[in-house]
Image (cartoon, rainbow, N blue to C red):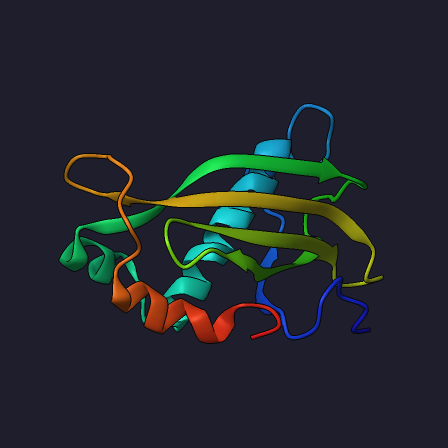
Length: 145
């Protein structure tokens, strides 16, 4: 089934582990946040912007705001797809990613999220303009570009 919120997602598949399940016997909410983070890192790495590239440039995209809408639960051994898209890019300082997490077996959406990032200088933690290397790597992946 391909009913993603947007076309052409970057996908990361995982399986709910026992350690992901909380006292309510479903996947803990923090695990969904971790899956979004891991998906974003894998997407960035696929574009040539892995952690080594970030350190070499002394720049990183840091989370400044996140909004997570938990829709349905997942359970141990469920296969999960996490999708991400870059939906906004101001070409100066910020970008926004959308996420959608679905259970593979029935394609039910479990979570939708929107996370806004700002470019920082790693050595100081201060906001900095996006380097041209970021622009070259990320721009082709921006939704609608």
